[in-house]
Amino acid sequence: MVSSILRRVMRAKTAYFFLLPVLATLLILNVYPVATTIWLSFHELNLLRSPEPSWAGLGNFVHLLTRDGNFWLVMGNTMIWVIGSTVLQLIVAFGIAALLNRRFFGRKLARTLILIPWVTPIIVVGIAWRWILNPEWGMLNHYFLRWGLIQDPVTWLYNPNTVWPVLLLASVWKGSPFMALMLLAGLQTVPRSLYEAAIVDGANTVQLFRHITIPVMAPIIVIVTLITTMETWNNFRMIWVLTEGGPGYRTTVVSVYIYFRSFQDFQLGMGSALAVVSVLTISILGILYIRMRARMSPL
Amino acid sequence: MRRASGRVSKALSLVQTWVEHLLLLVVLFFILLPFYWLVVSSLKPTREIFSLVPTWWPSELTFAHYQWVFGPTAGELRTYFLNTFVSAGGAALLVGLLAVPAAYALSRYVFPGKTFTAMTILLLPMFQGPVVIIAWYYFGLRLGLLDTPALLILAYVSLSLPFAVWMLVGFFDSVPKEMADAAAVDGATPLQTLLRIYVPLVAPGISAIMMYSFILAWNDFIYALILTQSDASKTIQIGIADLISFFGQRNWGGLMATSVLAALPVILIFFFVERYFTEGLAQGGVKG
Image (cartoon, rainbow over all chains, first blue to last red; front, side):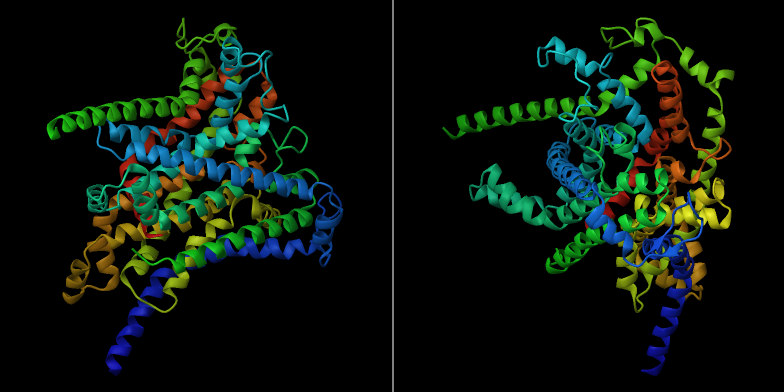
């Protein structure tokens, strides 16, 4: 009895010993910056005036919520960006995953190739898309004009009416392949016998999807959605390389706004307050996720 | 009757297979189009790049834009490439070293706080990039580390370490417990068990997480944008972004050739480790 407890304590000690380097690193490199951001959010730090932060209480937050003319616009833009990207990616990714979930010649190659957008550096993605969308020499305008879809060349990234659809298209293009592979991994865990039994009972494709695929895949759909939501929420670079938040503030999402406040106006305190608001909002999603996950029974 | 319907359904499923193949080809076409277009354009002479009718294959293949990248008028591009290699490589090494013992502990041991640790590690990626970039800048400013590769390496470790640990646990889990137990019975210390039993078996996993870390660092944009300022530490992506504003539309060929070269290392590495990577991804995802 005593020796078994002793052994368990010893084993736990060994585990902590092996975990220590990572825990220390994560504490310094991942947790400490979060703490610093929170601390800074209660301070006024304007690098153009003084390098020393001074206590501001809730001043930054009050300013953001009541006097900052762009804050609610930016939050609205973030919603368009996050919800639009995630939903569209989920739909497209499900389609790709279903197509890949068959045996066919060259399947491995196809699986590798579709991840090229995901693995390509963002500035390269930016150059490639800007070139396609270029109002004067871009192929999109060329073919759309030729096919009569548009009458005049469109400045896709500078026109307030086209900028969001184009951004979402680029986001789906870059994000859904990765999502598709995660969903594919899930699809492959669905037991074939379930489908076969249902087919014997006369179920059609839609019913198979609705009553077998979706329920079995539910946990993985939840995690994939969560990962994508968080990534899109913090996705500064895609928007930065394509529009830099423009035209005007039209595509300025919260991460881009953090950049404007902190590194163009050098209001680091204000920027930190924005970051805190951003994290709080996304944390609510994280908590919801853990709740949902806990309620779902393991397969 | 039954035979006829069998034939019909067989024909139907054949049609379905063809439709699926066709769809897959269409999807692949759109997925690869932007990158294909970039590569092809980078091989065209400047006047063909700016021709009013797009050509799907260069009428006159040229490597002039690539020569420009390595030539004397390309400024500090080569330094940027080197900087990116150093910071991404440094981060990958550190992540490999750190993640192995942690994944070992999380996979082999049961201890108080294990679920909490695993959950925390999974949720840490929420606090990355734009939401902590001010703090990183502030540290850099305070510690005098701004504009150094060291600061970038640390930032990149923070970027990939959580998920790397998570992914590696999956590889550790696939090692039969009996092997480790047998080693322990034979008197191997936990460290010996790790080094002699696990490390050889999960070597593909270790290389996969290091590659993952390298790719993530190479593909970073925001940390390098904020934390570097001079040519001595800028990464290639920031260099290209500078080129856009510097050249505007005058040197698209050079821009595109540089972009292709900037994408090449990660794409090659990815082809190399894709198999292990998607395995880890699948394990992480399904388990999560």
